[in-house]
Length: 356
Ligand code: F0G
Figure 1 (cartoon, helix red, strand yellow):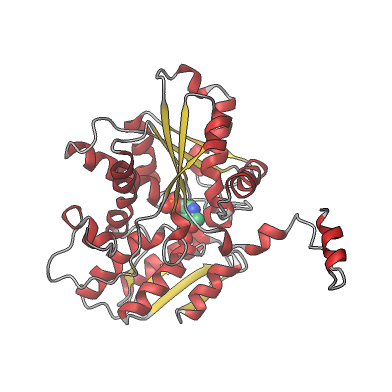
Figure 2: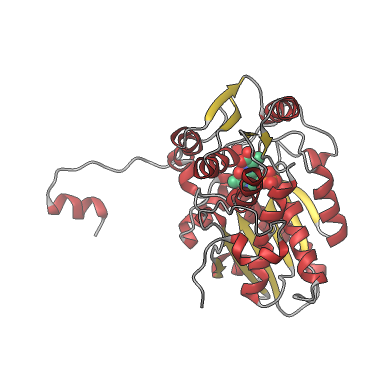
């Protein structure tokens, strides 16, 4: 078997690249699809829930799948700079791939609203980071304007190459399972990822690589749920800073995914997000950032509401995207946990403190 070298070589025939495209890669993709016996059991005996652990990408989020394509194409086109707005992960990824391509990267972020690990990444990869006194939606409006007036290529998911790269996650899930899941659950922020997954599933279906399509289940944070409410949210608020977005760029893509797949888009509260975040870490050993846990929180919520009761089938397979690594946001992880006890450096003291 050939060694794995990233999503472009792996899925080249599905991607808008040619022999002339310089491939800028950090060997992203090929992330594990982990069976979760605990979350399956919480849904019921018929369920098989798999976790697509996208936090194991090179910069710790799913954004790398799209960024390898977007930056490779920017390089091919001779871009002098790339620019993005971000709640953190896009900026980390753009900065890393920009560094690797030798293309300067400009990042516009909402001041004080991105997790520490993500800011550290953008800074160490030496992106030009600018914080604005506003939210993500303001930052996105500004980078759209800049990229239309100055020689800087926009690498937010409005850039279609991002969507192309991100759809490879669907391919991997189908290749791993040997079929499509019945449901696919994921968090929704700017709505690029749900758009990309749905595109990927549809392409595999039209190529007859799968014989059915999953229903797409998208979850927004309650305080940042414009698609659920049907109107933009002026001041989005949620503990899940990655999806703190009030006016998603790919709104229509998310609606299409919902309608065409006969799925749903709902919201989950911060409390529900943090409960799922804890279950994943404590019961499965899978550490994700809060936004990622929205996919599991949503599943548990609709299951309790009886959503799956009308669904026929002896076995129901659900894949669930965990979009980013927990180490991105260490502050939230330790926020509600007692700091460790400090004892004398003596065996008996340590044993006593450990309760053994
Ligand atoms: N989960 C994480 C960890 C994210 O960083 C994002 C988006 C999403 C989910 C939602 O994905 O926007 O495609 O619907 N983060 C963007 C960013 C907005 O700037 O990093 P989406």
